[in-house]
Image 1 (cartoon, helix red, strand yellow):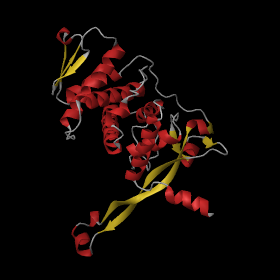
Image 2 (image 1 turned 45 degrees about the horizontal axis):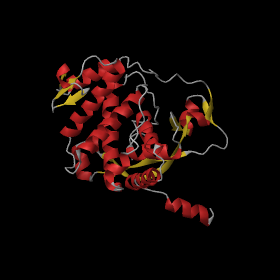
Image 3 (image 1 turned 90 degrees about the vertical axis):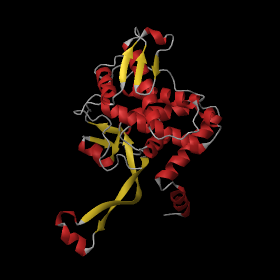
Image 4 (image 1 turned 135 degrees about the vertical axis):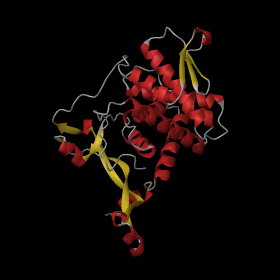
Length: 295
């Protein structure tokens, strides 16, 4: 390996925190340079790859913003497709799992639990988007295009399981929805798609308010986070949604740590909601088992 390649390899982020920090800094630079579509690309990636960690979602979005379905080289082989010659892989982090051996006297007490798998670090791994492959046709991804389908009922069921009361009332007009901490009010008469998006927005407030959050966030930041989550979920179920807020970055005044924290909140909350909306019979993002939730 030549020195240039060695230097490039050494400069690559090697931990989950380094990956997130590098991508957040890149996002700040792009948005401050006027590239407001950068945030939309990241949120689109969250909607497509919610089974992946925040670090790897950011990596996928940065390296291939239009990626829709990714998998490793051999996973594509299993699906009857091959990576096209000359295609460059999308670098992500995969876990290195070791075995923590118990002391002899501890192992003798319970022979069924002698060794414990532990995370010892991360390694570079590479995935490829479906557009970088060729071969057998894949099952079509779910596309709803303005129709929430069963996702609407699943969302209502999820809200009910959280112990959140859902009511429809004209009294909140002109607001489309309101969150009261354990209670969501929705303005009746909205289209199914708009009602779904409003419900997600208010549910996001409920989940964010209940979570142990930093106290320094402003109402504007919380509203923007809730809207970003509604954007991610809407895109994931196939709704036509407005563009993500181009002014998002300005809420943080270039503070990378606050932006990273906020993006993590959006990703984690979106992942929980999307998991509740998914059909257990369909695995749409097809993450390799060893690459999901790794960074």
